[in-house]
Length: 345
Image 1 (tube, one colour):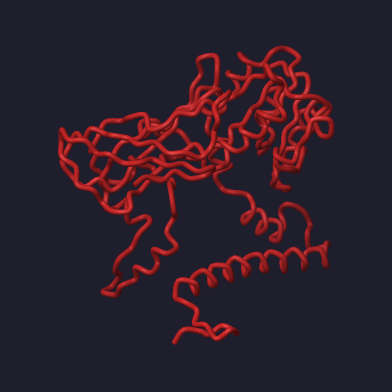
Image 2: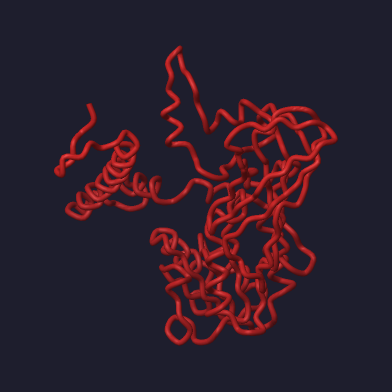
């Protein structure tokens, strides 16, 4: 029997799932609050970054992909070279998403006279400050522990930036908030003739069929029981997969799905109707997508399936239901993007 609210109305199964999700989130927040409160009550237990308390907090608050990203030599070299070629001598630079401060320091090495960088994660912001200090750049680089949307010219920034760096991208380009961050910063924090990095980006994709990959985000039965209710917790929109590690069938050639002019385009949510020629018979279950970023000065970065050394995986954009396609025919669908998600139907 379903629970009854104080007003006497029965709570639907769907709403019970929503309430359970909220309770789960509150439970995790409460756990972190309890751990933090206990640590503050007994600061001697926090002997330093080697303590168990610190390790637990860091594990829950700093995404593990930061390590893979910092070890991506292709990414680091491409961004450093693009900064070297593009930053005018003496430029004022704004870097959105400090991380460890890597790009801010590379901007100074490239000739910037002043660098402002922002990071909303307090732990990462402090790591960036100390890393910058260890390299003797604290007098040139200022790290703000806040989102770029909370920065203002005349308050945090002495004047609009000459160069805006925003390499906050996930496997599907937009999942870390690249579009709204650039949209806002470009309008308020970048000089009218300022430079944007990356300059533009394109998302490419192709049709695939793979029960194995599809089953990374869906379930029907297990051991003879219907457990499909678990699909209520499936990822909505794109999610990362390393395509070459899973068996799959390719049903179309790569095709550009959408492009973004990061320097001057609108960068709002939108959609695009696409028609993709099928190259094989089968059931199209998803699009596998990847980005190509133009960093400027002829330098690009991409995470195509062929680039197996990139720390970025590919983005899987599942269709709600598999759609039969025939070699020589065309598959029509609508690609949609919000500020954070790619979906297709």
